Structure formats: C-alpha cells, structure tokens
Length: 116
Length: 406
Image (cartoon, rainbow over all chains, first blue to last red):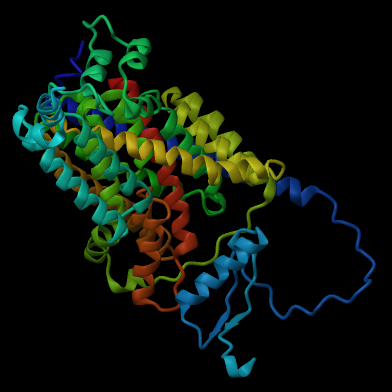
C-alpha cells in the first residue's frame, strides 16, 4: 500500500503522469461524445423536411453574400478603432440577448456629431 | 468606582496592546500590512477586484481580531477548525462545536468547508458561459487537456519540496487557473494552505496578461502568430441544450468526485440555454454569484491568520503557483503547435494558451497577441473553445486528485 501522505518522489512522478493521462483521456472521450452528438443533430436537421415556403408577404432584402457560418461575418470598420468595434458588438449582442456568433455585422462606422 | 482599573483592562484587551504583548503579535501587524497591499492591488491596480477586495478585507478583519491566546472576540478562530479536522479531537467534524464557538467569519467559512461556495460560483460561471465555440470545434477540448500540464508538474515539484501528497495536490491545482476549483480541492485536501493557495491562484489569474505573452512569443514564430483561422460552424440551439446534460452525465459517471463542480457548472449552463429558465439564469449569473462571492472572498481571506500564513511554505506556494501557470501555458501552446502542424497550418497555435481556464482573460490574451501580428485577425471566438474546455479540464484534474488523495 502506497503512503499517499508522505508520498515518495518516484510515486509522485507516476501519479502526475497518470493524472495528466486521465485528464486527456476524459476530454478525448468527451470530444468523441460531442462529435457524435453533433453528427446526430445535423443528420436529424438534414432529414427533417424543409419548411414550406412562406408566402412572400414582403420581399426580403437581397443578400449579397452569405457570411461564414457560426461567425459574425467579415465586416468593414470606418473610422472605428477595433477595440471600440468589439465593444459595440458585445453591447448589441447583450441587448438582443443573442450570442455574438449568431449575429451578422456588415460594417461599423463612427458617426461624428456634425454628421448627425 | 475603579476608573483606572477599567482603563487598564480596556488597554490590556485592546489590539494595540496585543501587537506587543502577545506571542507573535508583531506577525499580525505584518499581515495587516499585507492586507493593505492586497487592497491596493485590488482597488487601484484592479487585480481581480471582486475577489481580491473581499479576500484582503477578510485577512484584515481576522488579523485585527485574532491574537494567539486572545481569541474571545475574534471573528475567525483557526484553533476550532484545527480541532474540527483533528481525528483525535472530541470535536472532529462537529458542526455543533463550530456553531457554539464560532465568530462571524467562522460561520461564513462553513460554506467553504462544506464546498458550497465554490460549487455555487461554478453554477454562476456555467450560466455566464457560452459553450458554442467548444461545440463548434470539439477539438478545442484537447487544448484544454494539454493546458493542465502545469497542475501535474507543480504537484510533482511540491512533493520534491517536501509537501505531503494532499498538500502537493492542492498546490498543483493552482495551475488549473480556476479559483473555485483550487479553493474546492484545497478545502478538502489541505485546508491549512487555503489562504496562500487562494491568493496565488487569484493573483496569477489577474497577472495572465503579463505571464503568458512572453511564453507565447518564445514558443511561436511570426508565421504561426499570423494564421487567420476559418470561422467555425454554426451551433444549433438544441445542441446547446443537450450539451450540459450530456457533459454532466458523462463526466460525473467517469469521475464521480467531479460531481459538485461539473454538476453545478452544467446546471447553470442548462439554465442559460434551455430558454425556459431565464429568471434562474439571471439569478445564478448575478445576484447569487455576487452574494456567494462576498462570502467566499471574506472567509477565504479570514484564513490568512498570521500564524498560518507567515512561513516558508507560503513563499514556496507562491513560487510553485507561478511555475504551474507558466507550465500550463507551455502545455496549451504545445497542444496548439501540434494542431498547427497536423492541420497544415490552419490553426493558430496562440489559441492553445487559452486552455488554461481563467475565463475569459486567457482568451483575450490570445486575441490581443494575435492582433499584434495581424491586425485583421480575430482569434477571440476560436480561443473561447479551449478556454471553456480548460474549465472542464481543471475540474477533471481536481476530481482525479481528490479521488487519489481525498
């Protein structure tokens, strides 16, 4: 029986290595579970019939280009510091109650007082 | 009426006299100065102020009111907790004894001792965390695992420096860069080291923007730092709802000792994502989190009584904590470099350093360092994946250490 209180240095090295392996193993297994879960979700989403096309009550605004999925999309900054832009994006996301990666930003422009 | 006698008694009972009359009273003075320095760091330098202010004030209160041999009016009594933990004591694990003898901060400390506060903090963290980036790129979990290297290197280093196994495990978990996890594990394994470990964990978390960039620069080259990553896939709402249920089920079955931390983390996240418990999510993120933070910080600070804190072990813990943080960063970056190579240069290795928990500070550092080399590079969302994976990774590391040494 190993004395875990007054643990020897070789035993400590063994437990350290084992612990690191356990963390890796646990997270690799979790990664596999998440990958499988994601695949199942996507298969179900793909298998479900597309929703019936709604009557075009109002013509949707034309979309020039589809932004990359899962991102805020590429967008342009005009006279805006990227730090300020990040803050504006965070405020918009918080106000709308939506995660940032589900929003699409086209551009952010600083409006001077005399332009208002 | 004996006015002089009353004044003499008041004088003898005062803390001012205790500084010079009691055994080691001067140490209290040193601790009070340390509390002032911590308050300065928290208020002026804004080092994790929400926690450091409470910890520093708890330290101040306990060292103002507790002197060896004069504990009648103390807010925190280390000796009753020693009796509580001593197998040979008649008061071993007697909460009745604690309730009878306790000062105000002893009552607060019950929540730490029982593991309630760290778990509730984890619930708030879960309610505030968007696991979307992790779901979009599950490989991030590997970076969260790689970045736990410092935990086990510091554990080994602590054993080499003469700490016992449970103490070394508590010191090692500083490398997980996760305050509640460090407090949770230390309370279970080595409560006598709680003060210095909590201080080291929170101070280094605040210093991540200073600790990590030089290591990131040393381990990567310009080409790697400039890599612009492609955007992750979109994550559905259903995935986000199922995720906390799956993780809680899987991880707790794998390592039951992680149940308090992972269980609360995932419960908080379920409140956030399920869409029908917005009120609970809001409470977990704000009111509950703030209340628990007050109790946690002041009671952890109270354990920094002079007799426990002012010794060589504290210095060793501070040094080992720094080593743990640095090596965890190295581990995460090594993981990032492996991914960079295996992905053919598609993954920026800088996101690996975010695997050291410390949400969201470590991810912000990846973003800042990346943008220094490529102005149009936005690594934040990519770094959030390893960052939240680090939270799960450090909880698993703590669960392993608790299983072995608990």
